[in-house]
Length: 88
Image (cartoon, rainbow, N blue to C red):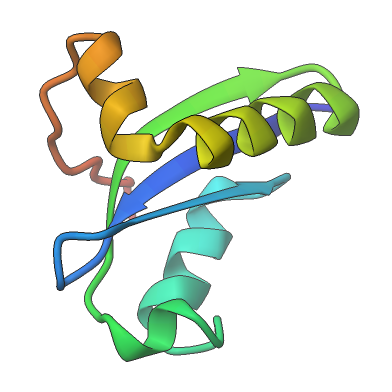
């Protein structure tokens, strides 16, 4: 089973970190307002994700990023944010 840990950039330039088994559907849920927290900051953009082989591994990474801070994590990785596009 593949589980994704992902980072979104919201319309107010804050970051949201989460985990999911279906990344494409989860991003669609965020952007159609189905996610309570991010629905106030639309649109959101997927700027980073990582794949894990278990829910436990993905959850550990999500908690670590949330504790460390998504912005600092992306800077540490020398990551230039860009928007991912999914094929229709």
